[in-house]
Length: 581
Image (spheres, one colour):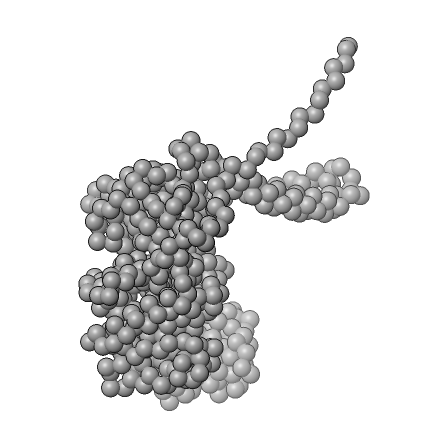
């Protein structure tokens, strides 16, 4: 036999094909750009109404329940000719990821605080986001037209969070406004422009585009659409863009009023159509030279993610293997010294215990798992809902299993998935067509559509509670104390009988009873007989005497014991999970 020396295969290291940002531009090429301003603040403090006044439109009235649940991007032209790009972020507790994203792409933050409410939880969180992103703040104290408004109190409260207004010798401008009546709106805009001038915001309008995805969603007839803010370069039709793990050839661009535009300069918010997949909100947009290059970048990013995942999986597999080896070793130790006959007998006994469940038992065992499918209108809302679900901590009561989540309307695929997993479909701001609803009804799948995030979470809590086993509560009907004990003979048997007086409520023969001695329950069960003098009787009222015998003969009565008559009621359990709002 001849030997053949084979060479070890060398692992090919794939070269990094990722697209990266360009280096900083030459300061001489930069031109001034309009500021990007994010409006932040607690829920219901009047952020959207403030924006409406600046835009002279009606956004707030169209929002479900009057609370904002998306990031909106708008370009506002002021009478002085200046332009400002506004981002409106949700103030609701569930959307902290969206607010953080709003803080990262922005130059200035307008912090809206209601004069009658003062500083609230999300106000503090917004200040934190602003500090993390190192963005200057302009304070807008809203609802100053109300009688109970107290702007000075707000300024004092903010001192605790290092937001020092100009009145107190700080550098934060405070403007008293009323979004409803439109008071001092121009003063707010001017304060913002003044701050922008101090910051000297500039951008490079030449070369490949860089930007950030603010929000993404699918639209019927237009496919995946993203709202983006351009940060560098000028975006034109036909450009090839890469964001996250998807790419686009720009087919169409439009502004916030759905008007088509041909080019977008830095700090303009723009809707982009032509994506292959939906990019995630917060992804960085980079322009590349050609489609093949874009595919290459996306392939590389997917490959990189796979490598990461494999690494994590390997570690998990190692841990699992060690556990298995340990368990196997322990199992072997048991049999170490035994004769082979004894060993096989033990094995046979273990096997017998592990007999498979009957199919009926199998189906019943999974009642406290709630599989759910989530569909949202935009990427940000789905992310917010998933973040809330990460806070779920009641897995010991009922497991919450996320089968699938996505952006867009509810499809046939979702219904089939829900049927397979016996799950529930939750839709947030999406539709389910008649065909889908009929299909779901036929397959017995629940579809729950919600427009407001609180309602969706409440519904989810109810659904979880309904999967929990009922709690059995004992309701006392009557109590009696034992005054004497004696026994009577029935045939050849001696039956102990307790002579009692009813102290409270009444004793009913059909209900359940328990015997209490020194505060401990020593028996639970039902009665054989209940007599008043010589007559059998079913109900004994307060103050009457009676004789009773139990269905267990071994129990001995003692004078001074208590007999309690009670009934069991099933009460629906409530889940202990509290999402925090």
